Image 1 (tube, rainbow, N blue to C red):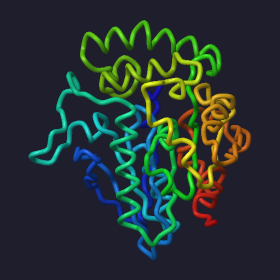
Image 2: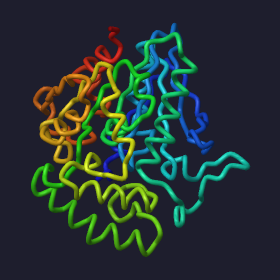
Image 3: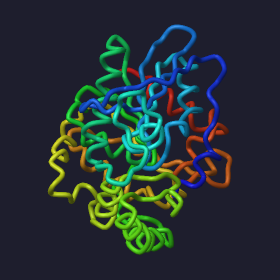
Image 4: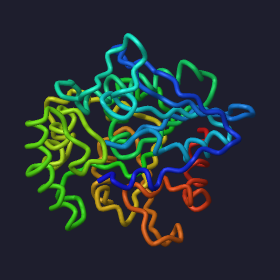
Length: 308
């Protein structure tokens, strides 16, 4: 799914500061992160939450763009992925191998995303705060115990990713890969190998839970063991979801299904097409191409920066 990640990531502008830091998860696990700061006055604080198997560097161009506009922006890697897997400070417990490493997507939300929200709120408590979630990063919003602290959330290609809601023939490819290749390899190796087609190694528990959700008609909303589902109705901020018309994973029905779980608000769902951006293809990842600064990024930034 994410083999094109490196090709679409842009560089941060030269007129912003960026610093690689460590943000502690709720259980103390060190998460690799990058903080982007404007050289001028900080007017907003924005947290960018990644898609599954997408490293934080992928969002560098978009983060730099937001920082240039006056935002303090944080990107980070979930546990067991990217630099939160290998580049560990001395004395920390990040694994060099994912075999035997215990983590689930529910852990990402409960321990990692929740902590990132808290870190930004505590550090920039006087600034208006915005949450950007790409794919899983948007799904996680509804699972957070502290989503009541988020006044504005922009979801990009975020969906209830039931396989039958994906576009054909991608849906059949997903089912065949997850069940016929991904799960067998994961159970043999003890982790899901990126070389099999994911683009990034994933912890075993993450891939197994993800597969169960993809096979369920309401995705994670069907998971009776996921008690964090009760947090969806707690979100009461402004919510905009961007649906890309040629995204075979996050189709409009899948986006609508996820948004339906935010019962305390009326999500605004906006469809954008390649024609809107003057390109032939956007897909699940392409929103973050640096070529979309004017066509797509500007409107997203203006919305996330708005107050009230």
